[in-house]
Length: 285
Ligand code: PXL
Image (cartoon, rainbow, N blue to C red; front, top):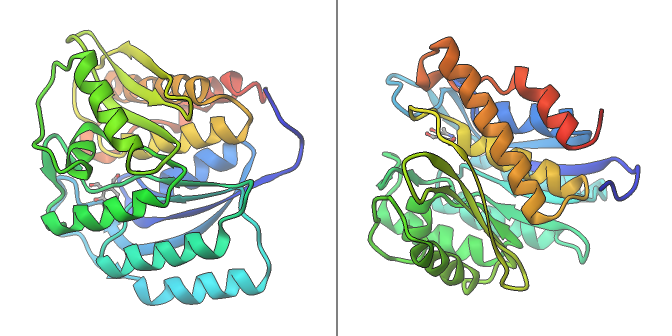
């Protein structure tokens, strides 16, 4: 349900990967389509994402982040949410903590997607120590959105392959909540080979699941599509459980369209033509 008609504003802090549809090239259009003003702080500029594509260029923009923060602060800009994703170094983790300290208010939301791993493996550019730094950042968040691999890393536990049990998923959710965030949304949850989705843990300790029929294949950028749609739901006044359902269905719809088109799985998912579904579910049309 919509809260009010004020335009909500998000600071999206991710890399800009020119091709391959992830991070900023996903977060900005999804938030904008959902009627939310999106400001961008790039953490790096790449020619493509790093998932299965070789030869990508990588310009680290760490040196710009504090100047962005200071300029935004001098303009007295308020954000309804600060949404961080791919961070490339320990220094960027430190800068994010400063950004949170500068822009956190009673009534806004810090959302951390601890982008660092998937399918049991850290992304190549990260060391195991990076997970410890990401854990500290998660401790400052109101809501975190890890996948199962990231959850295991944050809890310093070995990765387990699915099929999962409810007891294991609930163990992860409770462990993650003990790090500090009020709300957890865990992605990549499945209890059989037919359905896949997310599990949520809210401030009251209530656990919910949003599962949809699985589409074959592993598609890049889906974590960013999911997290951006989740934030769009929350800022449009939907509950954590409702927003998770909306985001799971939007991500699955985008994957299904891409699967049916036979597109290279590295090139991202067709979320663009799935916007009518998202806007309907957000009750914006
Ligand atoms: O979607 C996660 C992500 C973000 N940014 C970059 C990546 C990846 C995943 O591979 O490579 C640069």
